[in-house]
Amino acid sequence: MKNFLIKHWIKITGVAVGTLGGYLYYHFVGCVSGTCPITSNPYNMMVYGAVLGYLLFEMFSSNKKRVKTVKVNDVSENNNDIDKYK
Image 1 (cartoon, helix red, strand yellow):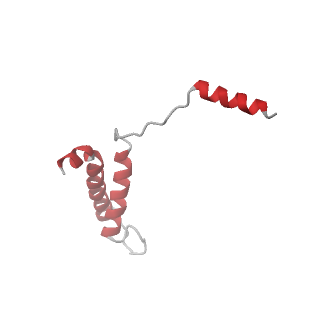
Image 2 (cartoon, one colour):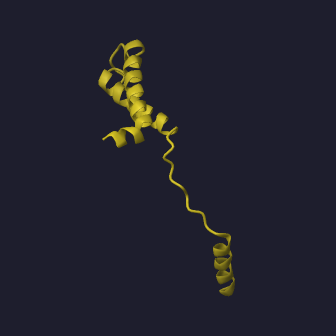
Image 3 (cartoon, helix red, strand yellow):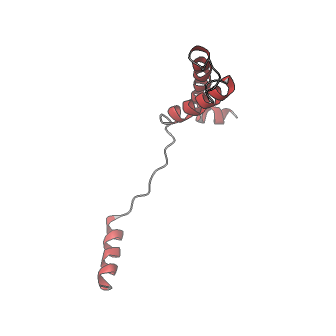
């Protein structure tokens, strides 16, 4: 559990900040008439804020997957094979 928290602390913080931001948006801005589907309910706005907070803070996460690069020799060999069939 401790390793999970250490590994994902940025994302967890993003969800917490987003949830708080969603509630504050509902409280101070919100929808007075109640016709707005997202901002008229504090729970909907908190979930929406949590998702946005997660996505925003995930951009700063260092857990990026590496893209495998193709060697230049492999590409040139494939091009030679294509030229044989022309």
